[in-house]
Length: 90
Image 1: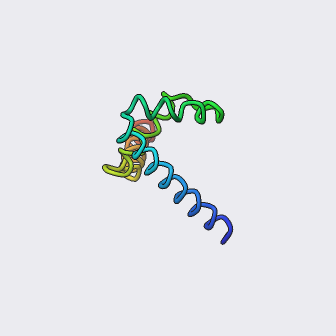
Image 2 (image 1 turned 60 degrees about the vertical axis):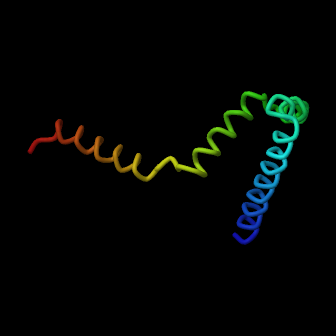
């Protein structure tokens, strides 16, 4: 369990570092320049520039606003319960 936690923390730190470095590239070369610079490295890992853009967009939403997964789950549970009540005898 400790090893899993250690790997998760290391992965999170690596992700933060890579995003910080990419941000510096973007400031220095602009979005198109930064994407051109990392494109071969993305493609070597089977990731397109569009995939990378999507990742950055989702990451930004999660970090800044959150997705409120708990709220979505509660709504789904409530809707499922309401739908079942329509078919169950009172």
